[in-house]
Length: 177
Image 1 (spheres, rainbow, N blue to C red):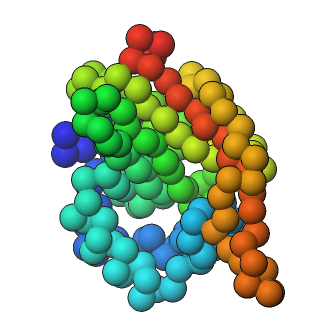
Image 2: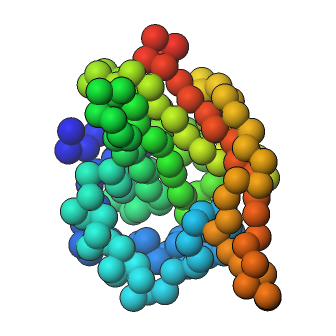
């Protein structure tokens, strides 16, 4: 699949020229607060655009009428291949939060993934990220686990890991409507 459209969005593969648009949101602390990476510089985003342009797991989400990049989706096949399981992720520009662009684009991508033969799609999020787990529940994913102090993306002043909990969500092909 090379791309698709929804009522308001065009979802396409990343381009090497998407660095400035990525920087518009990955440079914002509120956008990456729950991500495993810090805010990104313009140079970081130029590099990321190039990497994502060659990575079929990443999708650029753009406004259909203007082509402006407003966020990205991530859908990666997990191992072993025979399990036909994928992991979903998303990050959107805070300027466009609350407009359900993540819900609209993720629902279309999940539908295409299940139509293509996926058995199961999983997603993980920090329990403090209320908007993220509410989005997953709106999509019809069910919470399967609450992992206590299971991940650390940062360290404290002494260099010790700062642990946080994680939720695991999933949806099976036969549950998708």
